[in-house]
Image (cartoon, rainbow, N blue to C red; front, side, top):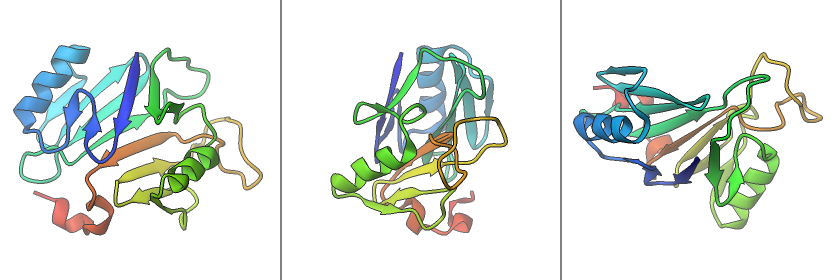
Length: 161
């Protein structure tokens, strides 16, 4: 299975702006019963990939976050951005290609680079034994978040219900 990142619209079958009920129905239909479903969060596991739907504002989907399966775990599910699997392609390559598309890459925080305006957020940290680059960071991202264009411009306190 491929999960295709579609910034700033979501990750199919989840579209940003869906209501809680719409998102719950979409997750259940596509992946089966979620692991967790409560106000503000719907979480599922897809072949080892963590899939979280965040509803941070008025019962509407504000972001979708996907998590790498973890050390020594193998998944046949790919998380794709323009054809590149974000969990197996070096993060520097993903960010370089994003910049080549004309997107604004903010890598001022090495462990949490993001692409503003689209919005894509990456995590490059883990305590697990993984291949690392010359700076000691995991070679590949360990999570990716897709949100709307203003997500990184909005103070976190404004996202709370």
